[in-house]
Image (cartoon, rainbow, N blue to C red; front, side, top):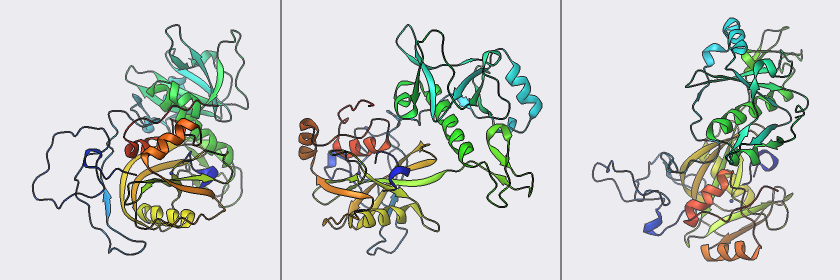
Length: 372
């Protein structure tokens, strides 16, 4: 399940009203009318890309059908990353000095957030002339439609606040509270900070590297190598069987009752579809047939990009690996609902794509789980 590396992480409904993994052969030009987003548009034809076998089967890939209620951390932020400015030191200096520029501090994956008088939650940002002093760890994040530039400062600790109204928060909590703009800025900053803290030395020669491109490159002064922010693709899948039950698992280090979708990292030389089948088989002993791409989600804990899938199991006998997965179970909708109500099963945190994948099968929002 790619455990500490992957998110809160355990398919689709075979009922016609809720959609299906496989539709009839294409016989006419598909309608351009957007389908009702209850779960997924039904009757989309699969694309055959491999000869079916035990670990290979037809693959279906189409676009995200969650646009009406975007997955957390994926809504348009309204901020242009403006990567063409990252190497322009004169432009960056002018942008930093501009009175409209806004800056926030990131430390250990946390930022300061504050409540506004009208009940909204915002990133605590200041003009650049009020920001803590730092030169090296100043990261340019982009420009919004009003021409406001945004920077993040990496510090060893968050600054204190005289008014005591602001508080520290990590992305798992703040991502659900912040506006798309602020959540996007925080996700960008946290990802850069995680990478910067763990990649200070050149992997080619071992020399300490220096920051360049406004935080988006580290250069080695000894051998000239350039190093870029690391992003690790990880698959996360809601697996269902022929009885339309969903497979949920519990990692070995999770508390009792915490179940979610299976997940794991894509290995070198492996397609994402192959990764889905391998991970499910390794962790739960279940063979997977058709695979359907749903959506992706940035997950900087520390550097994952979650690739969400729905998948159809062709076997049902569970054998957990015992290393990453302690327990795995099949649930019908009624069984999962009862388990939620009794407290036997805790739903994934709402910020995780895992919750949305389960909802696509479940047919309605999952119970709210507070961040604790």
